[in-house]
Every structure is written in structure tokens, then in C-alpha cells.
Amino acid sequence: MRVLKFGGTSVKDAEAMQRVENILEQFTGKLIVVLSATSGTTNILLEMLTFASKGILEEAQKLKNESKKRHFEIIEKLGLMSSNSLIEEIEGVFQNLESLLKGVYYLRETTERASDVAISFGEIISTKIFTEYLKAKNKKCVWFDAREVIITSKDSQNSPSLVRIKNASQLKISPLFHENDLIITQGFIAKDENEIPTTLGRGGSDLTASLLGNALEAEAIEIWTDVSGVMTVDPRTVETAFAQKELSFKEAAELAYFGARVLHPRTIQPAMDKNIPVWVKNTLLPNDFGTLITNESKNIKTVKAIAFRKNITVITVQSTGMFMAHGFLEKLFQIFSKYEIAIDLISTSEITVSLTIDDTKNLEKAKIELEELAKVRVMENLSIIALVGEEIKNSEGFLKKVFTALDKIPIEMISFGASNVNLSLVLPNVNLNEAVRKLHKELFEKEDL
Ligand code: ASP
Ligand code: MG
Image (cartoon, rainbow, N blue to C red):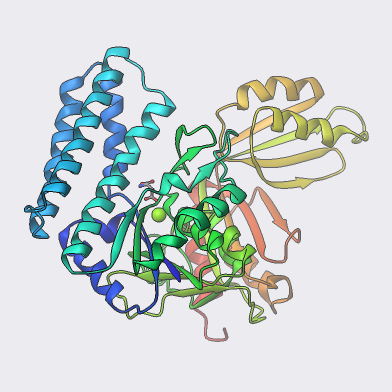
């Protein structure tokens, strides 16, 4: 059994859904097919809620009607207008959405729960339509509600509860394969232990696929998207970017975490735990090789890709004592943990610690407490560049190439050595594109590589 996930652009309209159906034809074994909402739909659902909560119900309803029209066009083009059960179901979803928008409008407030319910409609609709299309093509398939098995814990991150997911999947999904070849389900949507609707966070459909792959010990997890694999760098920044054919789990995880957009950062771990290969494939060019992510590092000592993230913040904490008394770091980290601020990179010297953070929501509060402890400086408008590759440390001439490329570019912070997989640099946002282009040229476009 394989788990195939198709993202929003892969199901964006009738032609796209037909392409997905064609791709599925190539497979002979059992499949779980995880779909995102049609592209843009999750954003539009969130916009509707914002309008409703601001008291602009007509705008919310206008967006809802447009979305309804778009989805009915897909139904029509796929030749499914005669399916009364599908029409009824989709009408029902839009009626529920209407009620929800009205509720939010009356309360003039949207809560996380309201928004989780509203955005779940996107995936419900795309999977309902696609399942009906497969049935019309005489496929042995069944629609399955992912919330029956994708269960999150009640922590602030909505972390998936692996054991519950495994038990529920084995109990509820496995038997469906007795009579079906294909199980169609939603990415992203979930519920918590108390049956409250949740999600796995934006872009979370990839994670659904790898959670199901892990729970049911799939042969492979395939993430189908609109690019031919994990690229050496974002092609919008560097035109000469190309897809890497193979990556290790560690490399892929690191790249996803530092901003390569093809995979949700948490996708790799569940696959890695069970040593399940992950493919990244292009729905538009299904014959392209794509990227294969496995346990094997072929031990090629070279950099595999460049990822970057803009708008990060560096906090430098200078201990006011002569040197860092013991327990200083512990107190420091306790403050970050208390305010749920995730730290990415750290670099320390005798009396200062610099660290980077992504989310500054609670920074002001944390800063007040940090100032009790030390002198604090906050630097904004910075970017992280991560150069990723197993064993880059041992890659010949690697550091020389990096510093040649970055000559004259101001670097605020470097982190190297904590893992074998990653060299990270922090620099001003304004220098980011230039630095990334020069690094790509030096590391990927020179003959001797
Ligand atoms: N539809 C969700 C989103 O747009 C989840 C996903 O597509 O992965 O974030
Ligand atoms: Mg995605």
C-alpha cells in the first residue's frame, strides 16, 4: 500500500483532477489518496471569516458564492451533475458554511475553533468531488473522513498523537481495503482527543500523508505537487535551480524546516521513524523522476540544497556578570520556553548568547523578563540561509566556496557543526537574494562539482 498526497494546485480544477485520475491509473496496488483543498480555497475560507467577524457579511457571502460556483463548475466539467448525492452533499457543506459565517457575524468574533471548522470544508469538498469522479470511472474506491483517525493532542501546537492515529487507522482504514483499491481522504484536517475539530496547521496535508504512511506502514509516501522535486534552491530566486534526485531524511527535514516550501517541515519524521521512502513528484510532469528521500545517504560529501527564511529576529543576550554563571543558560531557556518562543540557531561566547527566533508574538513579554537577567539587544529584518548536505563538514573546499561567494556580504551569525547536515548563516534581508544567488553559483554551477 502506498500513500499519495496531491496538493491544492494538483486538484485546482476539473482538468487537474482528471490528471490526478490518470496518474492513479499507473498504480496497481492499494492506495490511500490524500487531497488538499482546491488551490486558494483555504485562504478564501479564512477571508470569509474575517469579513464576517468584522460585520461585513455580504462580502463574506460573496466569497462563499464564488467558491461555490467554482466547485460546481468542476462538478459540471467532470460530468457529475447527475449525481444527486454529490450535489446534495456539496449544497449541505455550503449551507453549513453559511450558518457558520452568520454565527461569526452575530458574535463579531472568530475563534480558532470556528476557523478550524470553516477551513475543513475545503478538503471535504475536494475529496467528495474527486471520489465521485473515481466512482464514475468505475474505480473501487471509498471516501473516508480523515478526522476519524488523525487525532491531535491538546498542546498548543496540535501535535499529532501517533499512537492514537496508528490504532485508529488500523481499526478503521485497513478493513476498507478488503473491498476497495483506493481510499480517498482529506489532508490537514483533524480532531483532538475530545472530538473537537482541529487542523495540522497550514500546509499540513503532507503531514497527514506521512502520518497515515507511518500508521499503516506504507511501502512509500508520495507527495505530488507542481514542481519536479526538492530543488537546489527556490527557482523564483535563482533561475538555474534544479531538482535533486536523492536526499536523505535528515537533509530533507532540514531543508523543509529552513524554508524549502515543497514539504511541510514535520512531514519527514513519521516517514523516517518507519524508514518509509518519500517521493516528491510533479503532477504536471509525472514522468520526471522527482526526488526520492530515503534513509540512505550515499555518502556524497557535498551540499545538496540551499534553503532560506526571511524576516527572522536575532536576540543577543549579554550576561551582566563578568562571565556566564552556571545556570544562566537554563534561566534563559526557561523564559523562552515559558513564552513558547521556538529558538532556531544559537551561538555563544564567553558572556553573550545570540539566538534566532521566527515568531515574535510573545517577544515583548519575554524581553521584560530577559532584561532582569541580562542586557538584551533585538535585531530585526534578518534572514537565515541554510546550506544542507550530509557530511558537508567533510566536503572538500566547501567552506572556501561559501566564503568566496559571500565576500563583501555582511554576516551577522554563523552556526556550523552542531549537526553534520547544515551550515546556517544569518544576514540582513536586503542581502538575501544576492547571497543566495552567489552561493548557488559557487556551489552548484561550477564545473568541478
Ligand atoms: N489546504 C491547507 C492549506 O492550504 C492544507 C494543505 O493544502 O496542505 O494550508
Ligand atoms: Mg503544501
